[in-house]
Length: 422
Ligand code: SF4
Image (cartoon, rainbow, N blue to C red; front, side, top):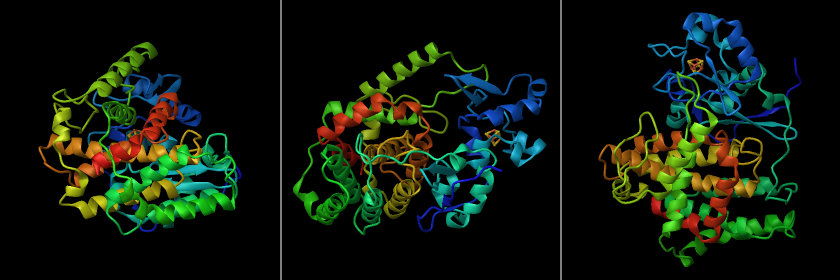
């Protein structure tokens, strides 16, 4: 039995989850396999029974094969898992067993979080998560390296290590700001302002208690300062970068029934779609983002949908978005080992950009049903879709995302694109 890092329960109060068997996680997810999964699946002898190898290689990694419609090859017509049915829960790939729990290891602990790609998590249905640490540990000990292998703590900024209490203080301030009794649009504007300010600051000489005092000052004056910094609309270049950020967050290459496409074919196709998103405007159709999402909606059509603040379910949308932001931060999913090893401040900027993408996707989803303003169902779909790629899509951890953010931060772009959605 490996010695495990202690698992810290999720601190977000009131977050719930129990599986309600919707099957969404098997219908439209790409499941990456660990070495132990591959050994187990081969030992189960599927190839002879289903007529093909259930494992597909794609860009150097191994995945479960999918059908043409994107569903897992093992998903049965009644929504049950064939591997589970024949060999039991513990015979499934570890990712399937663990979902939607997430683990973010540091040097001495592993923080438990949860994915909002799960419909029950989004709807906040089931048992309280704070009572489920033992369940997560039981599953994780079956072969999840995040439980036994410590990881480097996230630096505060690139090239600037975090000193004791700095990250705790920033987390406490962020959570307090998100939970504040103020309109969601104001809180998200504050998040964008804080992300931009910290990302542009030279923090090399502002350490320890001085950094904590700086946070106290910035957060203490934030609500009063925001009205003194009015916003222009986003420039065409900022809009283009933002649309490219949405593409990066919704892109999901599929290892389908015929096998995964080759690296060259998939890269060319990805570049084409990326360009279509970047250039999209007016009467051009929004490129497809997959099962359950609208087709034949134009960029103009999305622009005509009102912002989330105008929703008749504004309170419910606000609750979901606040819970998602808070759970992401407290669940250790915004920086460090579970977010491409990114620094705390870079991860915070990426979260802000993701929040803007959620707002746009919710309006896109509403446009697909000819609604004039987004409802809860639209925001649920958008949060689920964006959270699904957080920390999993390798390109989100790469240079193109960093370049996008660097530009948006310098031009006040984060605030502008967030304001346009909320
Ligand atoms: S192996 Fe089973 S649990 Fe995992 S995605 Fe496929 S059907 Fe779902």
